[in-house]
Length: 102
Image (tube, rainbow, N blue to C red; front, top):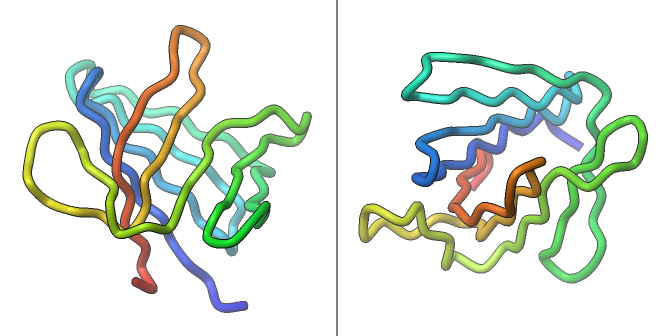
């Protein structure tokens, strides 16, 4: 499998996440606070047709992605390859993701 970068955009809060399949890193950038976080040893698993999960080293679910060309960022009319649910401590967020290969 070739290396791939999956970037997701969210609006409430304004944030973006980037997953690198080669490095197995998951980075979060919070736009408003200009803050970044990075997790290592994050694994991408295919769990169904066009459905993928990102889990941390303790197997905790971080994001669920669905390849549907229907993802939205909540602020523009742009359609993203992936629809995403991001499970944070506070709440679940919805957004849209694009991949370096799509």
